[in-house]
Length: 261
Image 1: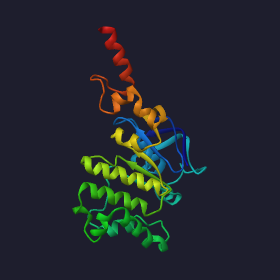
Image 2: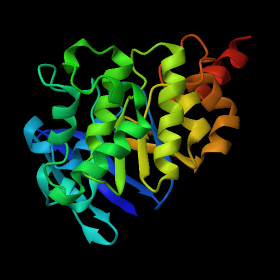
Image 3: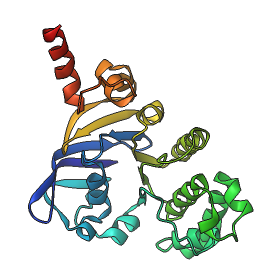
Image 4: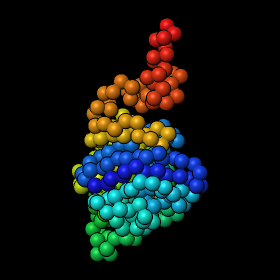
């Protein structure tokens, strides 16, 4: 189980981007983290995976624990060894390497005796990759590259998989395929923390959801409750009132409209 408590993160020693964020990803569950651009979703992931220093960021307060053990002091290789895999926004595959080479790179912390078995698992999950395993990854479609990025992360056998905008820029049919694959990966025993702009897709497969705004968690409820919440539906599921700049503004904006009418 991943537990984050009171997390504060600063960039360049002055910009406070996370202001006391707390969240939990129970074992075996999919948890969604929603928020507009700039809300602080990516800094949460960077804090978990030890990548803050690459972006001149640092944890100022709070803790991050995986299965009761602190991991907020670990660097990126240390978090992978601890059992965390990440698929970054934009896929970040090695475009000049083959599919097979990309996957093997993802197994750099794994026991050598498990690599072939893990490859078989990935190729079973993603048959299209198996058909093209010797193909250079740069020639794959966007959806295939996303599958490769997810497969590469799974090669290290993570307990927890962090997904940063996996549906970004993909056609609706491919988004559905990615959605189903996330569910299948979870059913095979991997917990998932899902950061997504596609709130409808994310909440449809999650057990719990958090909404982040300007570095703070403003809602923390079961995913089904969030999907049925009027304000969440308006702001995050495509029914936002025109003129409402943030989730909190939805209520204020509707109230103001009533006052002026």
